[in-house]
Length: 156
Image 1: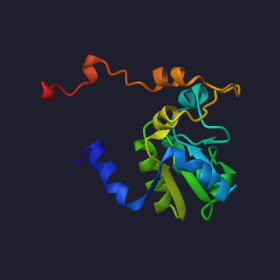
Image 2: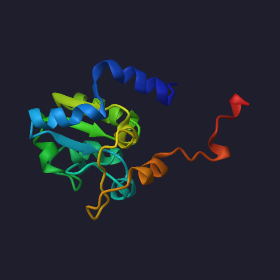
Image 3: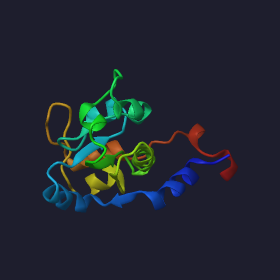
Image 4: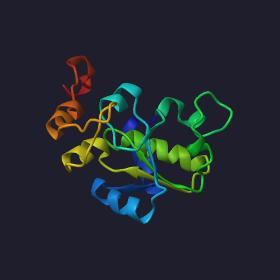
């Protein structure tokens, strides 16, 4: 049985990870860059990068294919496009980018540190109405909120 962190480590050698501060250069070099946010809809609605598209990881594969209710045409037709996959911390995006690579996407990257690192770099985030989010609100939103029952009991 593999643990989550082991799955992440297995994907890392296969996916290019991009730091938040490098994204602007990527966008300037390639205005057609597709930003794909794989978080859940409530996370995306609360705050996201401008012009990113939502393709939740739970339905990512069908978002990337034609003939499904979840199809996102830009993704389904975008196997040769440069794509940056985004999540909260950079783990879900790494797994999603790896899946997309297996599906034939040729230029897929993952946002290292995720939106947590994006916010810490004071890069802009927006809510569902297009209002810019105060970075301090981002800090609160992205902070870990583990409950006691979620902690590994073997760590004593």
